[in-house]
View 1: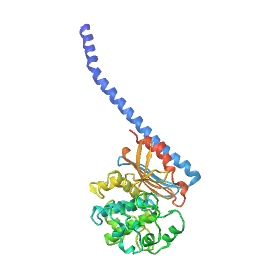
View 2: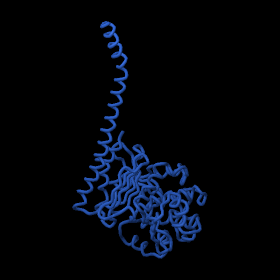
View 3: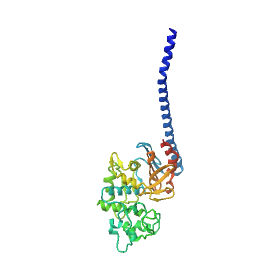
View 4: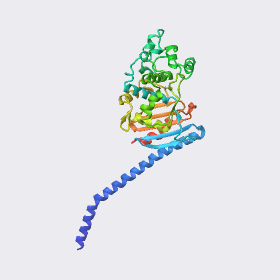
Length: 352
């Protein structure tokens, strides 16, 4: 009897081993997952602490939003800013104007980006305009390579354009050429507003209404303000106001190759062309596409909409990340703090 009992006990132990192994593995996987979640949480908490400490002396940050795999994993507002307040996007506006240009081409209002500005806006040209100016195309405007003599941050030509009642006409007739179109990158806000003028003309209404119909309404971005220039059209280069959550939707549209909840807002082809490098841009950022900046964070490529004073929509496709960072828009020194946050905390959080 004892021998049988011993044999039975031994057999039971043998049968239980696979079951115990399975339980152990599942427990280890659970603990590993829990540990990974805690590590990720710590990265986000550290990012918040980093910005909080920075703002004790600088008081500049307004918002930080992080979307990972189409889910917001971090959202915080600083220095009295809230989710309902609108950011002055500054030159982030340029990247949105680029999207609108793509939508206009997708819809057949404009044939393609190789069309000459002299054919699209002939009313601004006269017999005195030289061939170099006549050869400027939409792609030259999109890539900031039109060739005009220009200092975007001051000087007589920029001041004259700012004060002009017809800024695009002023650009074409009064600003001399320095380089052949398509040869040299030179950041030029006047070219971004020119794009807005093209959209207005071929849509038959102002750029704001075009944007509402084909971009903002489909994305359910409701609260928008957009300042007009003296010509009565929205500034293609700046002064678009939007919430941080609205900015996040723009970033997600780029991450998802122009698709929003199954609707193709702008073609995948346009997104691909817009977000590839055509020129070296600002040294502290990197390359330049169709009014989008391109920067590498280590081994990861990013696409960036960048505005004066620290306004950012940053997309890192390989990690399925969209980051929105906004700051006090009249203080330039706040511009690049987000790069440290991304490199130290956000990329380690999102890496597999």
